[in-house]
Structure formats: C-alpha cells, structure tokens
Length: 203
Image (tube, rainbow, N blue to C red; front, side, top):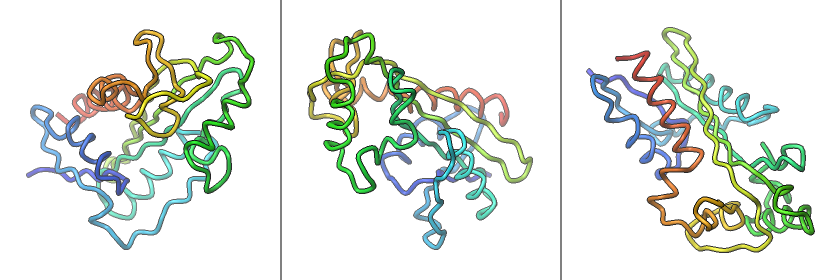
C-alpha cells in the first residue's frame, strides 16, 4: 500500500511539480497529497530567522497535525552585497502587500550604480521532510546563482525572475522557456536532492 506524503502547500502547480519528482521513484510507493485535503488546518506563521527554520516549522507542524510524512519548503532571493537581503522577506521586501514589481524596484534601487560583480545573487530553496513515525528529519538546499540586472526582462516568470540574469544562458529567468527554468531552478535542484534522500531512506 502506498504511504501518503503531504506537501505543505495548497499551490496546485507546486504539488504537481513535487509529484513529478517524488511520485515515481522505483520501489517506493508514495501517494502525494496537498493541503486541500485538510481544509481546517490553521495557517503556519513563518516567523523563523532562516529558510531552514521556516521549512522545518511547517513540516513538523503538518506532520504532527496529520500523522503523515510531511514535506515543506521555504525559498527566496539572497544578494551577497546586501548581506543576504531580501532573504526570508523576499515576498514582502517592499512591504506586507507589495507587488512583485514593487519588490523588484526596491532591490534595483539598492543596487543602482554597482558593477555586475557586486550584484551577484542566488535563489535558494530549502526543503524539509519530517516523518512523524520515525521522527526522522531530512533537510536539503537548492541554489541557482545569477546576477541582479537593473532592468526587468521577460514574461515567463514571477517574483524576481525578470531581474535575475543567468550569465550561462544570457537571459533572465523570466526569459527562459518554462521547461529549462524547471530544470535549473533552486526548487528543481532541491527536489533532485530530496529524491535521492527519499530513495536512500525509504526504498
């Protein structure tokens, strides 16, 4: 019988992506479900001081509430020159209800006039898997390195994608075809690592 794995998200796109990575591992039967199966669970307050702390908090709480193997992630953008900003505040960098464009403009403003080597950045995704039975916790990190460009380009992305330039591709993340983006993104890298760990522990 397949063991259920809860993805601590209600985002159907994210659940689909995780299913494509973890739902077809040879020798492991996982039935992957999202938070839509548990509509009465309260929202988790992400008040950790790092991506890891937030991902673990979500995964631990959902595992405890549901008794299911639970997977959560937290991600964002870090800029070396700014001491890791926007970091865990990536989604609300310009304010609680800020739009993607407002967040991008704030970042551009802070980096204006700086040479490319001082605008180095990385998208980071930390994934945590918590097993309520064995109490085992698996944490992995995916990174995608780039440079913040001072002009938005591309229609295929969201968040900071239009200003995140990838030197190897000579394009921003938002200019890449979705298929390519999904192979190199920080979430894809984290999922590959999680797949390896799941295979090692559960097969």
